[in-house]
Length: 412
Image (cartoon, rainbow, N blue to C red; front, side, top):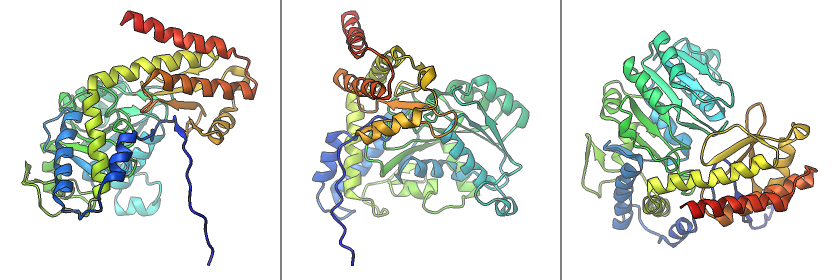
């Protein structure tokens, strides 16, 4: 028998689109959780309070608001499960992850024959994928034109697309869905817990799905937040869906949501881990204590500092998200993005390339909302650029960065 050594994973600075570095308070809550039965009263209390905190974070009165065990893909699978074979759907794609969502939709909407024809990449006649070029946002005008032409039952869009770092027009999406009698589904994986918004302000969007490891900043494998309107739940209760584990109605019962109402805590639930519940509960507490508006302002404040420093190195920034900067290297170094990212990652500095063409660099600031953290990120990236041969003045860039913070402090 092979004797494998103990796995030791070193500390790294996660500076990509997500996951971000989990808050030490969340890790401590996870580690301190006792070995408890999943029906232990504190575990049940944690689940009930998490459900209520999620409603505050989403900005909703939707009773069907809870966490789906797993990553963001688990939450999205649950939200998209109401789509049945033959349903007419329009999906807007402007990056890697909305592209994966689009593929999921094509799989769910395919007839048996369409799925058999291309099991891993079906092309159902009932689904229209609207491809928006990399680096551009989905606008209200694009949504309006597509829905007016195709008249679908469902429309789908990512709120923030981390594949290209673009914010899409959620108000325009909602308005077009409302005008054309379409049911909206939104991927809020990258916006929940970062942007300050209330989902109840977008009534034509009937389903929202997010993730635990970005704005909420819990451990990646805990709970993906979802929220459904009564209209969406009514459709599922009438038509059903082809899943048990990610059934929006059955899944809600594990959180004490039955027939549209919160029931008394203590009912049986799937074996949720006390460790995961403790970590998720603490992450939600931290988000609410920070305050949604303040957290959104802090992201915008620090993203601007990072953006200006990146541009001062001669890079071209193409993103407009406040948690992620996506950019091209200076002209003569174009094409070496993956090389630079690889060098940074080998040094414990976890930045990312884009996963679709054209290849760009992505630097994120999830849970890095301090002046010291941004100085560290910028300093590491300047050093990496210098090692690659880019001629830049590190002292000048760091001075400008600290100048920005000094000016903002005086203005405040």
